[in-house]
Length: 49
Image (cartoon, rainbow, N blue to C red; front, side):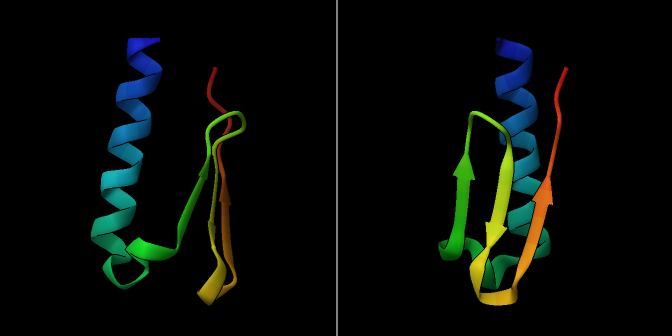
């Protein structure tokens, strides 16, 4: 669980660095790791094992 949490935080930090203007529009659905940037119509999906 700690590993997954660390990866999730790291992913969020990387996304915030790459898309700082979208930081306030980031929606994180923890159950399936979907990042949805509504303003830019970009969706990134991650599967973590």
